[in-house]
Image (cartoon, rainbow, N blue to C red; front, side, top):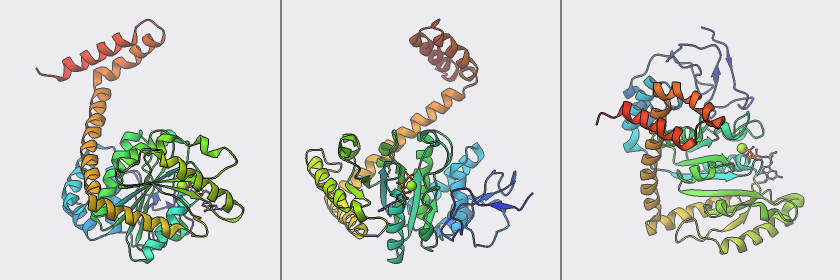
Length: 378
Ligand SMILES: Nc1nc2c(ncn2[C@@H]2O[C@H](COP(=O)(O)OP(=O)(O)OP(=O)(O)O)[C@@H](O)[C@H]2O)c(=O)[nH]1
Ligand SMILES: [Mg+2]
């Protein structure tokens, strides 16, 4: 087995204790049979023995970053054996999860989400908070690269001992990536992280998915030329708890302030994302740090008010029920598409439909009926 290690292309050049990701080259059937291994750099390389469920649970509860990272790798693995262990670990840590504020951050590519997370994360770490940064970025929505990728690598934050940064699990559909991110969030909470920041790029269904896993949702915008506000989807503004006009610095400051005022007017007419909370529009510069602390105090104020009104817990309870349904849907889909008969018949049926020789409705009826007959006993 080769011991050669290389950092993935999105990793900061100098690494850091907080940057928990590393690709181990040429590891196959290694410590636990996974093709990639995650390890916090600058830490001793443990001899990779197979950990028991209890080892994982105890390690996570002790905030052992190496074990936390390995547990996340289990969650991200698609192997049934890893999945079984991952679920047992989740069950073990469940009573210790949930004690954090979960903040989702979305916005168009390049809005400055990662830069903002870095500025906020460093500030929080220095206040003694334990900050975990996760990303939801299904590969299907973007080609190449990771969301915590090439442009901003959170180089300062990775060096904060209180920070833990985990890029998006690679591969798979949004549903799968979202499930993995949710479970990763629970592990981080059990490990004592009290602030979870989830970055997602505002593409497709990502925002809605991340909204369904966080307490507070921040929309990061930038002011462009002229009619930029027209392009913002009303839908995403309606799920945001705060709208932030970033890059309010230098020549852009004036434009950013105008955009903020305009956004505030627009939001006024929209349905608030959280009942009882008026969504504010703010400005900040993730680069100079101006306004970043104000965003955080807004988040704290939100948490306080919503905890007092009961909305906070209500949302979490609803999210838990929604998770159940989305996992059922995911599971049923897997069962269906991996069923041997369906798997072997699907390509032929697809071509018949494509050629117009078989109506879509008949095709679906036929496939579902086959599945039903072969899986149901009564
Ligand atoms: N002037 C200025 N530039 C900024 C600010 N925030 C971010 N940038 C720059 O904008 C570019 C994109 O920043 P990122 O933080 O990578 O943006 P992002 O939203 O995370 O981008 P994706 O992850 O690719 O969607 C970088 O070159 C940053 O340096 C800011 O407040 N002011
Ligand atoms: Mg980013």
